[in-house]
Length: 497
Image (cartoon, rainbow, N blue to C red; front, side):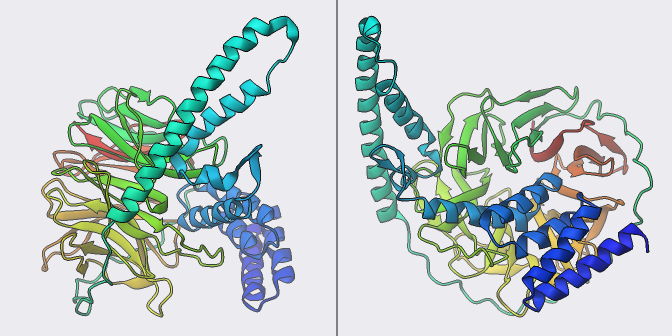
């Protein structure tokens, strides 16, 4: 029996044992599978599901995210572990007299406050040598000033939290919609053969204008977050934004401001941050808001709104729940108010405003129902009514919907049920008579498509050469160019002029 077939047989036996409740037996099969191939993402994911301790689960999930940082199930499972860890450690003192719960009251953006507290603590506990009395006096002055800043920050954030909770608009239950409309049949994806060697390196996109906002680099800490990087497409030159670790960036149409999911290493949490493209004026948007795990932000091009998904504050997270019910929220950049658009037990991900902001495309996954599967729906932010775009349930898994500049077409990635790691790029006009078109089909995973501002090009990420690189497709000619060619991970977020 070949090694590949042996791994598949071990996985099959392990899955059967896991579903029968025989965790110890299942663990043996999955451990044998990863011993044979430690690059097998599916083996690590299943092994995480039968581990006894959170530490063991975290190790397995870290390996999954190392192999595929965009594995949503692993991301959500890791988020659940983080939340569970923070909850269990809430009462433990991180600094004498200050508990983790007190620090976490300030959300992901509490990193600044925590740093100030650490400055105070370390200053107080510093060198007490009598020979440096003068230095101590100076240090005490610094402590006093820092303490005042901390106290002011605590007061400001607490007031803001109370204001936002009072101001948030109660959301009615989701408006029932008519049965999903009869849509054109989905494309038929034929599993592609496994390539025997890396594909040829393609020419760079010389002469293609604009800038691509990406998250690119090496995930050394296995967090699933990378530096936010701006590429000049015509030259291939890249400039990382300073002190950023994040994912899913978006940019305003003028390219002057970027919003992204920010990783906070102090609290092992994440939230929303906005920053100028010159690296100045970084602002934590999720600070003091009645949400946790805020992520996947996208700007509205016509008003100062950001759409994102998050869990409501106080939501109990179940590690065994494969799809936590992330809800859709709007953030008003002018008033700092949050509006909740969905209020149900369904999980939502990767929302995106239409160019005129009259609709929001989002992936909807009713994992708790009998009709399980991820599909794309459109949400009217005024009426909150949802309209189906795809209706294939789990036959295909859609992800990352984005709009064409004229608002007539959606582009997204889709993978068949029998080959979940082989996404293709699909465009779907929103008229009733139109059919979807597969514009990128490779013997590889092709994900995260983004239109150029003029609609002539599509940027996406592919692992066809063994590493995640960014490619650019010219829609009129079918020509494909290669923007990056490194061992780093490169993912597009937004394309601006």
